[in-house]
Image (cartoon, rainbow, N blue to C red; front, top):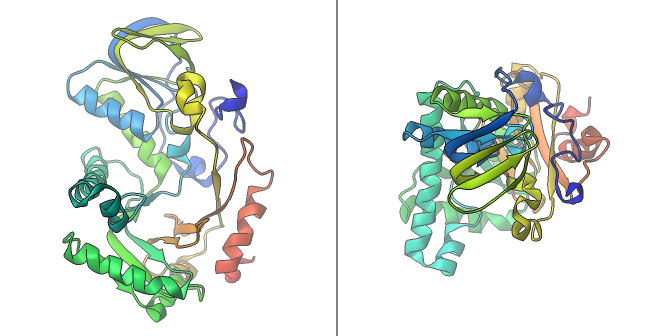
Length: 341
């Protein structure tokens, strides 16, 4: 199991990865491990965005919900991602139309729109302090992508009545991101960015307030499908009418069919020291999130205290690089040589 499970490959039990996010996140109390047996309507395995949002909404609907996590709420990808809020699906609407037809493509677009609206409403309704800001800028590292991107912006404006996105020409683009590396881009002001670990912790606090029972440091060893379902941990068992698997890349052998088809693709983020208001504006003038058109994408944004949070480069292993700073800094300095010190 250990060879297939990232739960303990690179991290200490119950400890968030040492990061800017962990050092600056909104505080959240630690919750006890499950000790003994209990019952509920729904048992959620995994306390990330998916699990916590599901638990919150189920509890608000009147169900008795238990959430189990092997580490802490927001410990996995939910607490250590790029923090960028985009529009649409992984594929563009034109490609989705060709694959599934225009009706299905429009439904997929609406699902993504609803997702953004839900996120913003949760932040507002539960007063989650997660540095939510507007703006997501897709920048082009090749001139040949300009016509395609302009056409896509026009498609969203006209066919999807999505007026929040506009094409930015080269000179304005370079002024906006403080780099000569780009030839234009699409600026989406209904997208945005946030502090992901603070958001996850805010969801956890809201879920617990709604009546969810959250158990941390509780690794699920196995479960039985059916109704009821029995969920086994080291020191107790949960009997539930339904189980939600919300483990993402940490699923391991809980679903062997999925595990057999999963490989790790790891991407990394580094943080500079605080840069000050003037230099921060020189790098990202309008404090939007930025992601680019490279296949191995660079993505970056400013933190609340004006650090550059720069993500880039990949490896395909169950082990992280020994020197993440050095691994990612090479990519950052290609875009921003002025950050060499």
